[in-house]
Length: 454
Ligand code: ADP
Image: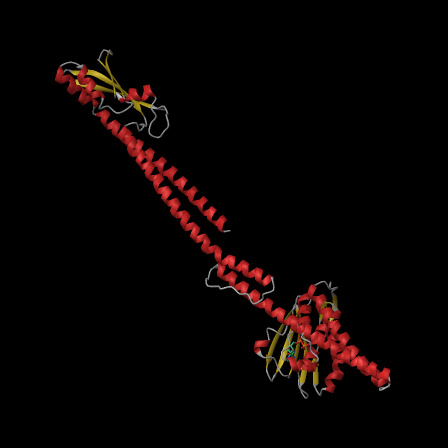
């Protein structure tokens, strides 16, 4: 990543530099050629007055004076001086032209190219008695930079551009190296931390100093690590709980059987009923675990049927009624027929767990109230109790599997912390929602909302 970032930045810098050098050089050459063309034209405009001065001074076309004029002509300008009768008096051109055409010397751009377009002009030369000659001039439409001074100026500009480009490249490369190293180093420490977490060190955390994407990633990573640690703690606790829950009835069953074998206890209906009760606890726990696992994997393909929740609630309340009465609780139900599309077995489980919790966590003399309402697209079930309530801080946690608010108390109540995890899974499978309002010492309200059609 460091290498990739570095190389791609260098690539971008190089491309930008080459493009800017080429375009600046191109624009400069064009402007400079225009400038040279203009100054050549200005010089050629002065030619008639200079020629007539030579003629007036000597009274004739003196060859040596004309040769002197040659060297002041612009490069590649060809002048043919003709008398009014059309006879050629002289052909004038800058002597440096011959060097370029004969030696094939390259211009300073390193390219030898020929002039594409020419301009011609005929300029009359006037003397005291009128026109004494005509100068036919031919010069390139766009001047080439052939003059040694111009050429060296132009190449100096080009060299400065290359120098500035090289310097920018060196500075850019250094900065890119430093910046990419700085960007990549937190990612490296994140990767190392991820490996350590993968190896089982769940206490691994990374420092998240920045507030950019990398900082967010570090924060997300830490919260993932926190979560993993919590899950791991819950899993260990749950394994211990399950072992305990299984051991207690199993030990009791073994004691009964040993007592039967030793003849200490008779295998009468009362003792057999006690064994049966213990077996019932075991079956219940294993059932909870299996259902949670299946609902969790979503593998339990719900075969949705129209279910009247009123019937389900009545069934659950009827089932739990003996326990409610034993504990000295009162229960009231306010239900009207309300159908949802869902799985009857799972919905029964959902309501059973909620009403059973209200029963478990409400002191004798308390009240449980179950209400069923049919709204526009949804059906709402409210289970309210005047029980011990749930602390605010625990509310977000109670739906996590294996979470139990008060370990010793729930052990007494027989809870293993999977009832609400299963409730949440069932609600999710039915595309519904569940909310809790609760106040410690006053009671709790669990509200389940399920869509009428899935
Ligand atoms: P458990 O088997 O321990 O009841 P649940 O998943 O059903 O497990 O509930 C998780 C925890 O939420 C319980 O241990 C209990 O502390 C709390 N809780 C659930 N329902 C109620 C309620 N109606 N009143 C008070 N506390 C409750």
